[in-house]
Length: 411
Image (cartoon, rainbow, N blue to C red; front, side, top):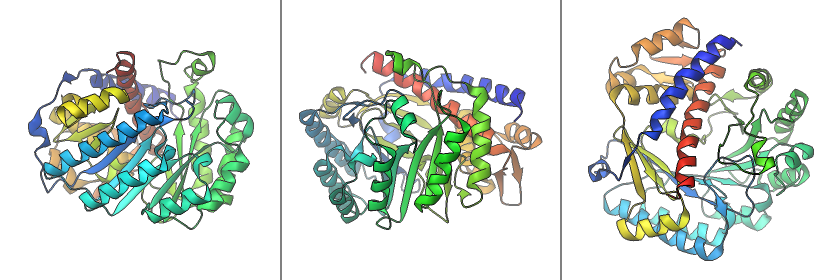
């Protein structure tokens, strides 16, 4: 991999990512005037975990049942508010945290959503330790189409090193077996480039994915999270980015034998629903603590702490506390990145939305052989997958920086 090119990409995208910190308090209510032609997707964040994994950079808090009950009640209120505004959703994605941490509350929430909106597809994340036979049956019964299981590694020593003590590799395999054939899409999540992880360890994980018989797997590079305090947490801040390309090259070579890339990080057998709802739906609404939405070229950021979320919804019906209106160039770059991360960028859609706003960027990506072009679209090349993934990684790191500021200030 061209390290100079990678360094240049990291610098440029990091500069763009810092713009996430330039947010305006409050939000413009006109942004939420519903446009039926936009067809946004819905993301719902469940921020509770029984244990906090030290490597995780997402918005999550230790589970307390009384807070969780209030939280789900607030989710219902916020969802009704969007319903009253005229919004309709066909796809909903539950992320966390641990969405399945209280199955009763989750099931009730999903049934409310199905009654309120024209939901056709539901995707949800789950820990292997949560997937008992009864849980699998209930998730199937309430209409989950895509189940994403957070395996992270099939090497027990790595699970211990990363503080992921909720399951062993054998328990993960049993959970996958229980879920097998019960959902149209079963995805397994992994993280690569851990400090103590070798290429041999990663090769083992990839081969285990193939043996499991699932139809999708997603591999995330380890990303830093500055607010970590303990010694175990801090070890995941010192990421050796020079190793990352070796891991990714191995991933590409092995996965392309049996899977096709759905995104630069996600590999599927056939046409499967993916976890990156921002690709198939350029506009989306975020519900719940710490969620981010994007509507009318405006980033909308919710309050982060669960108790603040409950208070915010009670007071204002929605949990949005900050926004950033993107310039045409910024919005076009964001659209370009998310679409190329999903392997293709439609020429007609790009022209319709942003005209020639990113023509220079696209030309440079073509010259670097990161993307190609045919009559109908730009497409991400096999060489370009690593670099587009690198861009997306730094986009997420920018979001992480915003998340850290909000958590530290208890917003």
